[in-house]
Length: 133
Image 1 (cartoon, rainbow, N blue to C red):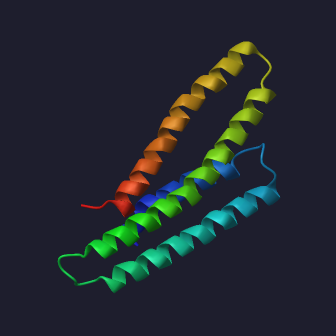
Image 2: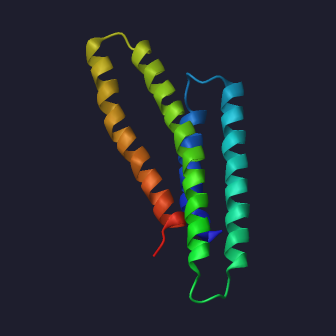
């Protein structure tokens, strides 16, 4: 489980954002939580199977690194594209719900660090699980 701390932190942040958001209905929130839980289960079980298959083989063959990197790239797409769509939805709803131009400006400005953190999470996920030495 130590191997997946970054993933669990990422999921906790996603769940906090989703569950605390007033623009997303409860049924959609539940569907999002189920979606991320299922893809996380699939990711962890598949990655563990790959790791077990190549355990105690030194040096680790290139076939492992190729499979692992491809698997992490695929899962990065499942995590990141869906989360980006959710973030854009939240920001659009937030932007349209505020009335003053100053508030709209602050919403737009707040998107920049949010997007930077989003890109940081993608980098950390890829580096932690898909890095090939």
